[in-house]
Image: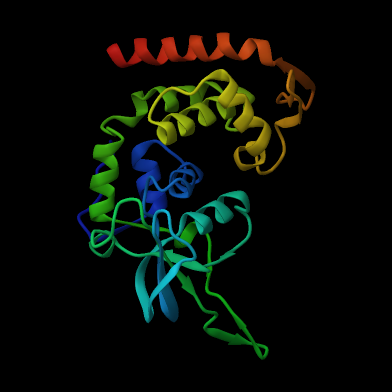
Length: 253
């Protein structure tokens, strides 16, 4: 792993390069709450809230001023990932872990921000792009330990990323498998993977350059030349079994 200088915050690009990932990958982790991506926020007001398990509606905890380095909400991470070429408004952030520890692990906390800047007589949010994303030294260490990132150039996923172009349908399917594995804390079934592919493939293929129509039986996808190809649902079980075996064998080496 490429060493990074000692400092309190790193750009997401610095960390992504050191880990053999892309900023898009990190945003996907951020969208699922697997990593805390930060933005340097100019002073703005916002309301902290909590959804307590089994209760509704949400409770407003306090209204306060927020600034400096703040954790982006998964919603903003997802918006930025889906629209990588457009600055996204920072509409919400997350409390840090020191505050979350005061609540039950099942409680959902967040901070809704107000529109602090006046432009042409209208209020607007602060905008964020890939270049504005940061990761704290504490989160960098935690993420490396949780993902067992030591020598990323040898990791299974990154080896696949060198073998397939970024938008390959194979890679998209495997990314969905990995995300569901993390969410469910188990290997997902082929049925669950296909369902997620049907419902959320635009999240994984936001530029719509790989995935075409999807039915319960077949997936249309486009190769590097733009030619339409087909992947059958009945082939998914075999594909996942083969990829899981590859990963298992690779982890043994």
